[in-house]
Image 1: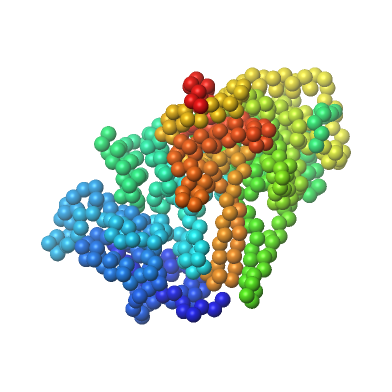
Image 2: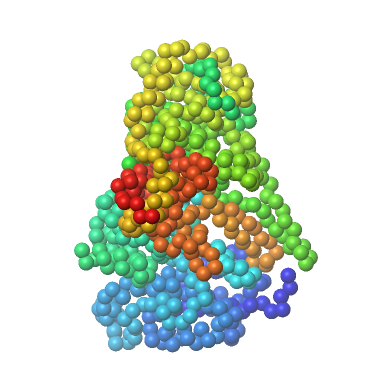
Length: 260
Length: 377
């Protein structure tokens, strides 16, 4: 299939650990093909050579935590035909959204020798709160195969296959034994977005919820069950207050148990 | 497969391996219960030492545990999280690949030639579930060729349950505990003070031929056959749960708008575990994927569930967006609409949906509650 012009791709970083954008470089077997069909125009983690915008596709990693970044994301939006957010930070505020539950100046005073040099917003927020986002790919970090899938779908004009049902369906299709029912291990699988291929339960660990809330999550029922099998209020708060702490269903559930 | 009972024979438990070997020599991969991750699941077994000898299971709503019994019984447990559909109606199945050639494309069908499998330890409820899926995939207007190929290569060695589990209600659903039809072999395991043996019945011509390859098995005496009947009556009386099936179809249709559905929705997580473990749930979704260059595409068929939003998604949104409508849809189809669709119930009373619901929602209890509630339609 011949193309007139390869779509131009840019990868942008906000408050994040770089893990999600590195999963693009981690696509070892597919990377050369990727570069054949997509022009990697702006990806500082991969190359210093930057081709300036406009871009057909922007992958945005990280959350908005400074007023400077809150401005910058608008510039990026203006330069991008399609903007895709990748990972927990960009889609929910990430682990750094733990600051949203308290006063950030306390943390700043504790961590930095000269807090006066730090200019930071009170809340870490997802990109969606600032600009229109065309597609959100979840995960902490994202699954590299899902990233390839989203790009393939985009290139060929079809919907990406990234279902938003529970992790339980991935577990059951694999033939995993339910760690919660058979071992009494608290697991966030029933309320968590699929995409990791049930990584933790496949190793007999409870799901940590790294892909965030699934569609229509029933967190209250799960939290109740967790307590019946021995979890404390604190366990429930900590479980929901992980990488997707500020995603609304998880935030509300953690707050409900904090008050108890 | 015929249903009439035939001459029953005695297989000493110590010779179970000989029986397995006859099946293996006839080209069958033997698959049966085995202990993995503190659970009894179905996997390839080579010899009787792979079976869960001396293990039993304890099941309640949302909980499953196995424990040692100190007895040498090989099948002293009920059904676990796996259903045989994982072999017959695959969770993930590649249907075909397509490749571009010039301006068009060509479709390559997957080479789908499943091996011969002998299912060892199929319980009465599971035989009934296989028969229900047979009806859907083989006897409806369209034949599912992937299922057909696998089913034709399957030998069923049923084992009667000699204990009833905490969530079992096959007696209510009229599917057990005794296996009456749809098997190649039906075994009942007996352990008394002196002896440990299986009473073996064959249910097909193929089984008879295979039996002839075994060293001569003695015929079961009238006393031994009576022992089996006695045992099975005992199991019937000790069912962990029950469902009153009288006019059950109308019960559901009369309670379409019941407040009960909203109450259940405060507990149901729509996680879809019940549908994944149900041995009769058969719904699938299609996934089309392409490679980056757009030169190859694949079509996959995967287990789906009526508990997802995508399942009922049509232009404009999901037909069943609320948790209550999705739960109602599933249970109403299983116990009521299945009668309209397939002229029988969709439930076999295996209790998996009760055990493997992470929050322990119990269909038998919900049906009791429904009976107590005033009709709304």
